[in-house]
Length: 281
Image (tube, rainbow, N blue to C red; front, side):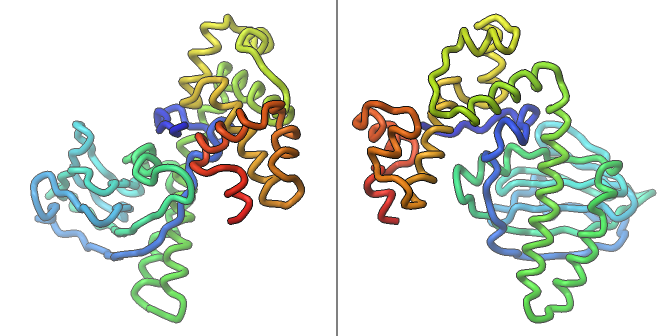
């Protein structure tokens, strides 16, 4: 089963809580640019194939083009450019900007790192970013001072900034009526992971028609009800196996599988390894 990258507008922490699972593995650069009217990116449609780039606007303005759109970047804005994303930027001459730029690399612990970074917004307006504004000057100072452990500190600060951005992007969607219905259904599925669910029964609980429920569930999670339920069950089975609490047969039974062979096939499809091999890790 391949975890699909959800629509960035639809990622929510309660619905797709394990989609974002990565660590910042390296910092390539931390720079601070002063207000230069002639500043611009090194090339038209500039691409950095090595680093993801995080930019915080300290003051002034700049004009950017990326994702097929134009943006006026102002004080307090944040931009994230995944590796390989073509973008063009230049200071507004009458109000040149200054900024802190960070080039970093990241590694996914689960899933596809490129899909995870790409699913994040590429531009945030300054009203929200006030709450994390202090991270960027602190990061620049830590990088410049190079005191013992500075790379650890810098990675932690970038992780804090990225986490804040993910939370800002995902939380608002939890308050729509349909989102709340899907959240309640998924919470129930997680509590009673060993049960069997039909789309019709779940749709009734949500107060939706089966077709509407099926479409919303897939839109919000990137998976069908059956695929998502299997993901929950296999995740629980992995915990049981790694804890030593259960052998393969017991883990299958505890997670609602009466057919050990079907459980083993599904486990390998989801994880890439047999359950018996997984216990040897």
